[in-house]
Length: 238
Image (tube, rainbow, N blue to C red; front, side, top):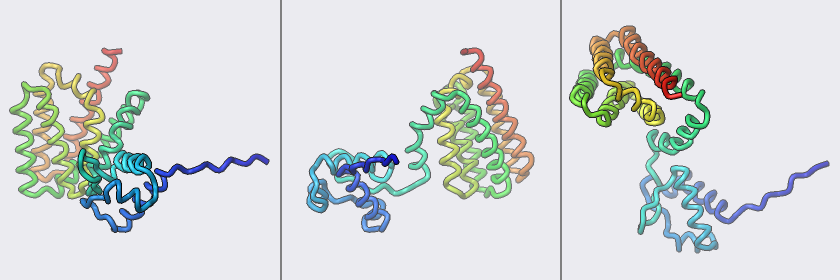
């Protein structure tokens, strides 16, 4: 019979476990600072390297924030923070496995068409005013490609925000940023920004009219055209 050897835990792992337990128990609340490195060394009877490595692990996990010259602080948890933590891995996945981009695009169509429908059902006058402002910003930025990208994302995030669920705009923004390299090659083609503008205007009008079916269709047309352009650009570059 084969037995697996017992793995010896490292000191910093114990520090991570104990600090995480204290944070989850509310002993150290979001926004509050952790004890100093020296205090942690005394509390857990470990050296400075173990404490520092533990804090770095907690920072990479998105649990604490470390600023030079200050004690580590527990992060106030948000959906955006969660998305930021997985951004690096997501981009690596898209680069290492090209087929994943197609899956990501399909997921985006599924999510954002549903969000457009929801926005048409739930949008308040203030929501529509904010969406109109985003579309106006896009129109004013048609000659500035980098700013245009930001305005494009702002439109889609505002539509997602109309759901009232903070997770949706965080996910929409994350997907947009993960695929940003593919967006740039598409947006820089002359004339496409005006087509995209007209599509955004149609989505906005449908939401303003509180017409869920029209809003869903307009979003699907917009994203499907974008996906088709991705495929054309990909073939041209390969």
